[in-house]
Image 1 (cartoon, one colour):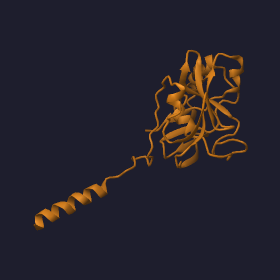
Image 2 (cartoon, rainbow, N blue to C red; image 1 turned 45 degrees about the horizontal axis):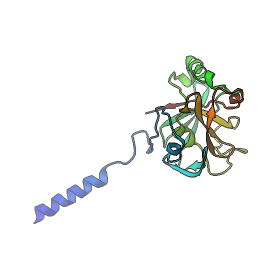
Image 3 (tube, helix red, strand yellow; image 1 turned 60 degrees about the vertical axis):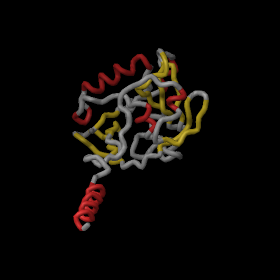
Image 4 (spheres, helix red, strand yellow; image 1 turned 135 degrees about the horizontal axis):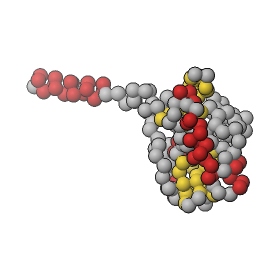
Amino acid sequence: MRKYLLHILIISFVFIAIPITSATGGSITLRSHYRSLSVSQVQVIPNMSIRKNEYGFHGHSTINHDYNLKAIRGDVVVIDNTTGLMWHQSGSSNGVIGNKVMQWVYDFNSIGYAGYYDWRLPTLAEATSLLESSEKNADLHIDTGFNNEQKTIWTGDNCGPGSMWIANFLDGGVICFDSSEDWGDIVRIRPVRSMR
């Protein structure tokens, strides 16, 4: 009987000792590969509080972020210890028309910002993880650690030929945008990279 009880106690201790977070301190992994997403697929993105509409949704992230503003080699980044992502603190200073977005990212990587060459567009899941429930940074729904000039940003996820999903920090909106239209130049880029 005593051996049996001892085994139960050891097994219970083993379950308690298992860590629930990653080695980098983050505990939430967001999708980092691009996909083609329909409106209905976008409306079920995890870790979001969503109010659906016919174009996408309005909402905000439910992730409890642990942001850290840091200068690396003189370049400012925002590290999110919760998701394991490193963000460019601002991004493009001007809007970028959709067919020039990937060229912008390629050119950005050629300079090795903060010593890294693997910057990319965020997925929609990553971009929407930045959406705050209210205006936190001037009139934007984003943390004050980020530059407030990027009111809308491109993602790497598409919603059909010539169209890409964007995140709008003015109102917490997510919509499908025709990236070939001239007015697409109002949308900017905020590069991200995975740290794990």
